[in-house]
Image 1 (cartoon, one colour):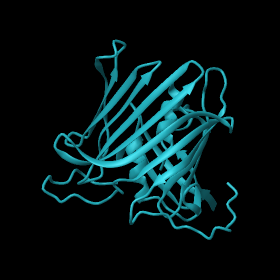
Image 2 (cartoon, one colour):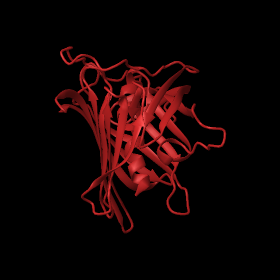
Image 3 (cartoon, helix red, strand yellow):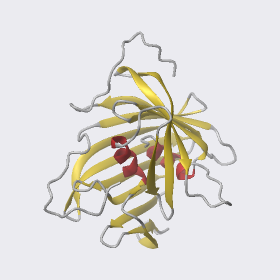
Image 4 (tube, one colour):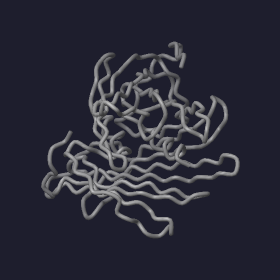
Length: 280
């Protein structure tokens, strides 16, 4: 189900120069061992899925990487979807190297992006109907400041502004099109986070920059209309997202809410006094 794939990706929302020499020492950019659990609801109360995310380390074609894994499991009426999302970011440059989405359950789907920073291209392949073969769909020219859509959300945590009115731009690719988005802090308010306490959160607006005059922006990852994202300010961690998502002929409101946060030392949120108003 397209909506469940979108939920898995959007639960974690938001440049570097050319690829560094292989002998350069890795950089500590991401909180390895961090993990999240989100719950997804339709119409504000109907559970439709659970999202898990974690940060680790690995390698892609002998390059040390930070790994980001997301899983979304949803069971809605007769439809089941178990979606896994993977991204590898180089420990040398923090650039995307590989991204994949694999869906199991009622439907089997898959797509993969491989980044070649020697030629500055992304190779996009998609799983065929035989559920075995991946077929080349497109080779897309990109600039060094383009990330895969999942890895971009984690990379952007290091550069997000925190003052109301400030903006930052990100570029990301989902399949064939490079999206240039402007992320603007619209407001800040206290937010009660389960298992953590009261934190300060900021609402971030995503605005497309590179649309043609005849294009209509439907939202990130084919989500309909506006996406509302709340991010914990001190660590720039997404804690809440809502949007309208196409479910056949209807477009119900879907909310994705953080329920658990496994934190690591040195990357913990600033907790406010418990009696601070947290209306969200």
